[in-house]
Length: 269
Ligand code: NAP
Image (cartoon, rainbow, N blue to C red; front, side, top):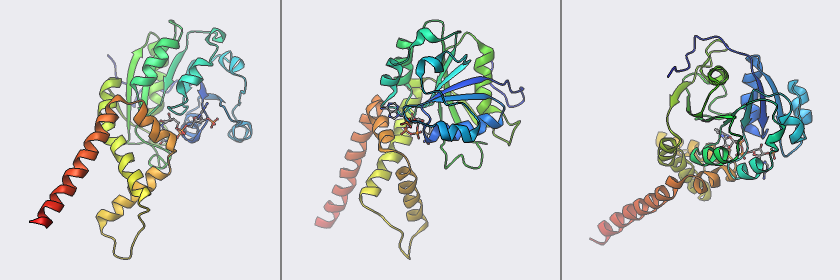
């Protein structure tokens, strides 16, 4: 299996984006710079925003799917994916299309899409492990996880992966990590979901900087701040649609109780 390398040339693709929220807008800026032809659709009206970017906003889903996309990139929230997919008139597709998603859970979109897509459509599931904040100065060295779930058109697929792998333009160059959706969800429950959980707990506690902050506390505050920038829907989706997150939440509760009991036991001694 050939892996995407930063030295291969970029192929300009026609990419249709579904769900033009903050993350899609962030990806679009780079895709436009790379010379891809982008069009977008979304539940809300982004026509003015798209006009400023110089790309079409297509409100009607039939028209959007008829618009000759080589790649359809799903950037909706985790919680809305199945409703969005159910509402898509796949018969409007004019050609076998590569479907890709960027959801922060992976088994769930893989299963929803495998069930709904026409058999001639290809599917790649991806998770860019960064966002508008952490990727603000470029994607160099940041990780993109992907699984080629069902790929027959390798040229379009590798063209899509080069959006992330390419170092040709403003030194993008993600660390490209191929792994299964299951493996991703196991690891993400232990890392991303745990980070969001702790950040949300710290936000509930309304922690604020003090004049005597240690470096450790500064890092904790950063975690709280970064999580607060993401929607609660995202956190909710990380829990509801990653089967490994449930166990992680239990582990967190047990560990917290364990630490508390150790303290209380020592005090009682
Ligand atoms: P988000 O709140 O997770 O998703 C916002 C998008 O979902 C918007 O396009 C919104 O459409 C759409 N949406 C929400 N509810 C909907 C509904 N009921 N019906 C139809 N569409 C609905 O915010 P986000 O940060 O932009 O994330 C988008 C996706 O990227 C998510 O799946 C997330 O897991 C993934 N991701 C995010 C990051 C990040 O750092 N933010 C990083 C990696 C991956 P409208 O705007 O039109 O209402």
